[in-house]
Amino acid sequence: MSETTISFANHDQIRTLFGSRDRFLRQVRDAVGIDVVLREDALHLVGDETHVARGRKVLEELRSIVEQTGDLQDEDVTRVLEQSVLGQPAVGRSATDQPATKPTKINQKTVAIDLFEKGRHVSPRTEGQAEYIRAIREHDLVFCQGPAGCGKTYLAVAMAINALREERVRKIVLVRPAVTAGEQLGFLPGDLLAKVNPYLRPLLDALDDMLDYDQVRQYMENDVIEIVPLAFMRGRTLNQTFIILDEAQNTTTTQMQMFLTRMGTRSKIIVNGDTTQVDLPSHLGGGMTDAMQRLAKIDGVATVALTGRDIVRHRLVREIVRAYDRDPQPGKGQWRKKRR
Image (cartoon, rainbow, N blue to C red; front, side, top):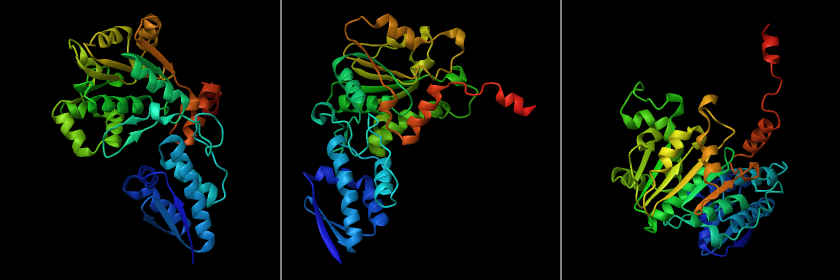
């Protein structure tokens, strides 16, 4: 039997390394075949000498990611285990295409988002995401354009929770266009919540990931957090409110004008979208692109463009986005020929 010790700067790093309900710790322990004991701010690894050495390497790499990004994701743990245990080459998730063991260095003290929820923080993992957070803090209206998986919605929701907990706003309103139903949801079964749930699910997922279920339910029951389809925003004025419009590329120019003019005193609006994924008929035009052009020179308005380098989902998402960007319509017409 062999034993070794890994020290940490503070207990928050250990909590992040362990993951929710210690799922990361269990994953490492089971994959490597060691016992891990926590004593104060140090982990004690016990087991076969070879396994302990391998476990130390895995945990030190994960600790390095936590120190540099302030966060740890499932794909990080999977990648490090594949590299160390299975001998597979590492595939990075950092902002640049450098190895993932060397993520972009970001000053977490200036951009980390405190959720005031059991010590939870949300940190940017790329410089583009850090720029996005700074823009939200410094401007009342922010447009963010970027591909799927770059954190547009997630970071905006985290900033909204932070503003609510710091009492800079009194409520959060999350908005999404229900394009595929043409904003006419009456034919769907169920009450209003059941009708719009499929369209608003990504926003709910982000909330559930940051706050406990009971806290989210309490906020929604007390109308502190409101999730509504875009069509229901007409005629409202929202004061001291953090408003997020998601999937804004699917708004028309008229809808965007209606939405932006809901802004009341001491409010903040974040508009997110991917202008390469428009579901609107071509003749309707794009409200997001139009608004960014019209409002670009107005003081208090910021525009942030995230790219494929900012994608932080599964590593394949970045490759998928690149593949579609290289050739939007590969082999056009070939499918029809084969069918004949």
